[in-house]
Image (cartoon, rainbow, N blue to C red; front, top):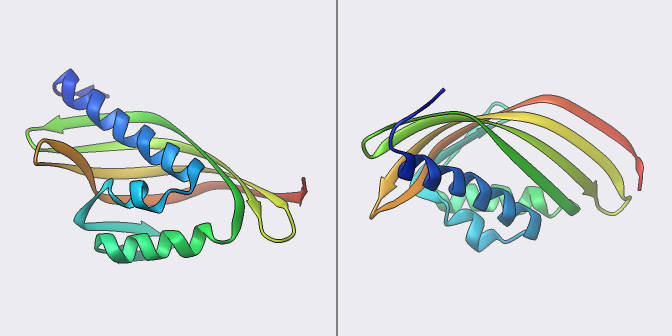
Length: 138
């Protein structure tokens, strides 16, 4: 379900898409700028808090891939003033270093957003892996 002003929903969709684009390009600066300073990222049962820590965890994870393709599909979004919640579905194709093995992941994000200084940011993201398929080198 999608609720709230269309301008805010479009801005949040662009936030999701900017996240995916930054992953494809392995751009840590742009990727981390999408998070609130006090944001929280939960994955694999662990929560990382604060933009600096989130970025460090992401950079460490990304260092293991020669290619990280990330696709996002919004599933739900509800805007309420300067906050919002949403769900997105993801597909990832990862090529690991140094062996070139291909890993395909389907996942889901449950997100909370905050608008600060007129800009939407991720306040929190909770990631769940739904399918994780590993294969041979490309």
